[in-house]
Image (cartoon, rainbow, N blue to C red; front, top):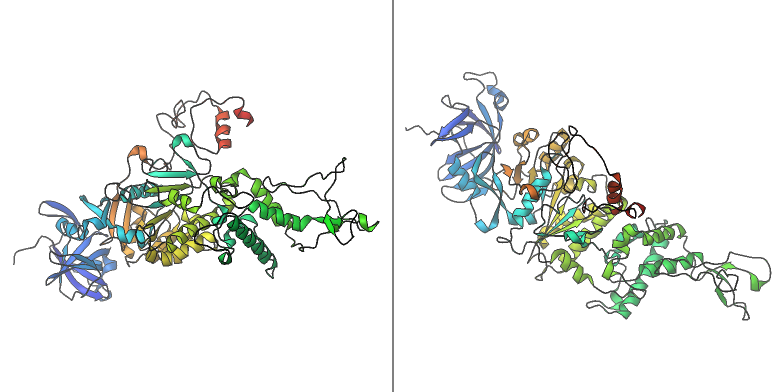
Length: 636
């Protein structure tokens, strides 16, 4: 029989999806040549093919050497430790389509071959070209693109994990560039939750950027999150903190007051699709939170006295009086100015006595109301409590409704929306992300059968630095929203891409829902174990390569790829990389654009202008606008 140059050995043991192969005496481990091209033989992560009639079975080498030998043969080393362990992953008809999973198993003495470039092209190029997007090329064959199934990548969820410096952010930028190609996917819809403001530069030509401290000269738009779009639980956590008093009386009273304000606002400005009788504390109807604070403040602080010249059972507010006998401060809801009341006085004539108001009775909410007043005045939270055109007036009327907000975020002309959350105060970040996810998901869920819904036009949510708010110990709003999307999102066209440098800190329930994993360099054993257990393919040997992957290289496993594949992700151009590149300690060249001088510890620094540093700190913006600060800048 004519020698087949692809033949490497025969099957000696079959255990489920794991087989053991004994290499042929003629097989030389290392580099072999087939049809003039070199292939690595017996390398972990390489592919093998087992012909069975008209079907070819495919597997991935997970272990090589003595450890791969069957137990009964460990003492027999007639030809050295020439054993290979292979994990079976799929099969394909000769000249036909490759499919994951196997319908039959190999048997003893079946011949095993290396997979050559022609086989790889058949595997990775199978299927409808419109269903696949190229994200780079195979690490073992630069001429073969690495294709992922965009349908399964988006709707079945995915995760990009890798240690700091592994090229994770650049990989995400490269993936988003591929998924938002205007020629191939003109109606792509992607929203990025950017915790550190890294992606604006990388996606500048195809992304709309929303930021709290927006820089309009750079094309950024102001980020507004209307508080009245949140559920009662979300708003309560952000506005009041803890309301629970054991019996729920405070929560119920605040909810009742909120519902009444929403009903009053609905009378002033009717909204299509909702009647007054249908309004609940969670209904996204505008209401004036300043009026809610003012009414509750009066309930807690108001003192009363008998109305002068009238019957003593008629009580009026006991405002503090000035020298002219007029009330000193009646208070104003919109400016968060509380009214000033006279102190309680139980002695003297009844017409001069001052009592606490008992109608309605106080709720012991003084501490929470003081906190809410502080938040309503805080300019850092203006995006939430004073949201521009979405800010209700005292009657609950707004200039814009949620349809315009959703259109800006997921219906604009650009395929990607970046919500730059770098200016959000850290204490509320978790609750805010949870609220944003819930708002978007609810909108998509109820519009699932409309052209704007997820079934007609799926939405991909990219969650950067996910370990910061999806940890196992975290039971906040963000984790709850992500769990819901992970379990239900596929049916309604909402997918997630979780990005993290510490996968071990992410709730395993969430990570296990990711159908596709892009695993980059991970040196930590705990992180690798977490990824291995979450992956849909049992390929322990393949994941053992994670500590030695190159920067920008990933092992892709899961539903979106035909076979687990080691890929070099195509990065964006140098001037379009995320703003997350490691600074150089020793380097020649200019500092960050806009500054004069040479960077690095090995260069001389003649002068420094720290007033510019303070100016940018106060502006809460990393972008230097080339304008020399004035004396006024130092006083702002």
